[in-house]
Structure formats: structure tokens, C-alpha cells
Length: 148
Image (cartoon, rainbow, N blue to C red):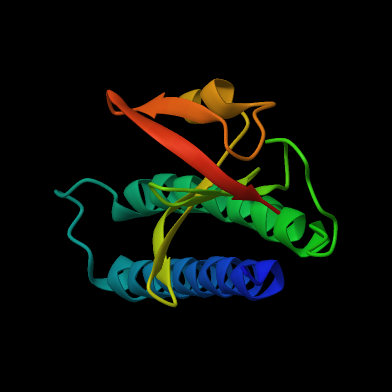
């Protein structure tokens, strides 16, 4: 039996850790620029512009991660999904997929988990399928074993 709450908690832990890492990197970049700004030679390009562009990109990533984290925290582990739909945990013979958030391969308790959005091609392939239905992935037939 799959413990969906434990899996959700692991996804939340990974997202939280990533947010912390990005925030730490942002802080370091800001400190570098303020330190380097006093000693910077005017012949070089302005590192502040480069840093601000990187910080803007990082801020967009942080915003996206914060939305994903918020979404994860709202998923009910007790709701039993009958079909592949948003917030379902889909267990297949290939791996398990949490529908609704993007997450690269996550190994938890020896199993492979992935987060896929509803825009992902795989979701479009398995959307509305039920347990025991088959689908094609990487030119190979796979089976949905359970949906939580």
C-alpha cells in the first residue's frame, strides 16, 4: 500500500529545500555585487546589470516553486481518485506520477516518483485512465497499477 501523505511530504521537503537554496544564492549574489561594486573597474561591463537579470530569473523560479509548494500542501492524501486527474498519485509499472506539479525523478523509499503538470504530454496520454489501463511511454506499453 502506498502512503500518499509520506510521498506528498517528500515532495514538499524537496520543494522547500530548493526554495531555500535559491534564496541563499540570491542573497550571495547581492552581497557579491555590493562588495564588488566599490572595487569594479569601469572598463568592465556592469556586473550589477548581469546580477539583476540573474536575480529576476531566480525570482521567477522562486515564484513558480512557491506556487507549486502551496499546491502540494493543499492536496488531500485521503481523497481516493478513481481516474488519472489533477492531484492523483498514479502508480505504474514504470514509476509513480503525482499529477499537478513539476518534479524531476525523486527516489523515495526505493521507488521512482515524478511530478508532472497537466500540460505535460504524458498527462495528456494517461488523463482519465483507470487502474489496470495500459498506455504507451517511450515506445513501450505500460500499465497503471493503482491510483491514489
